[in-house]
Length: 197
Image 1: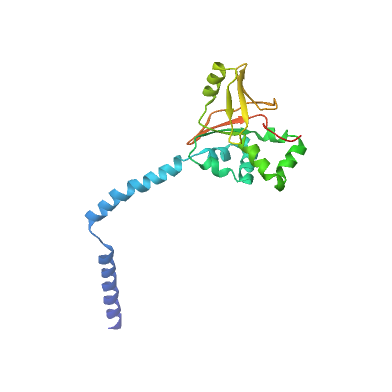
Image 2: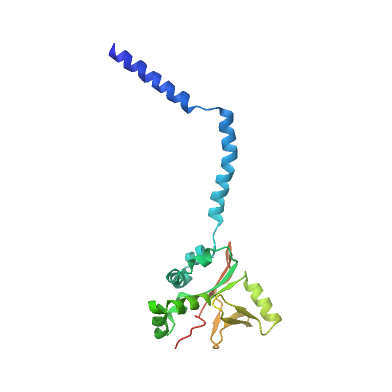
């Protein structure tokens, strides 16, 4: 008898759960129709949002520059809408820096100078290598201004693009046109606008 009562109660509970979970199929369909595209759009947006920060982090040659962005707190800039063009010195470019200069910038008391140095490799606007070449062809005095207020002269020689800072230091663009949702990333073979000796 007790088994029968338990069985009946279990059956009733299961029935109640099924009834309470079941809803109008038309409403369910409408819910899917309204919510699914929004969710799908969000997921697609996240997958496609490969901004300059993501692209810089994913570029092995820009590993040191990425660390510098994080250290200086400038990673948010590349996460911004932009558009920006980033001239990231390669790992080899940072390795080739004068050790005294490198130690100066890595000293926490010189953080502001380090921030300026990194900003001097970022400009507002979305410039491809073709844009840089065309502008350099049009004018031998073509320059770009960085977020750190440095002026870099853009020139072309033997099909290569060069950036020259105010002190006459010249860097060559290596890998170019790494596309991001908010601009472009180009790699440099030298760190520019270094203000110490």
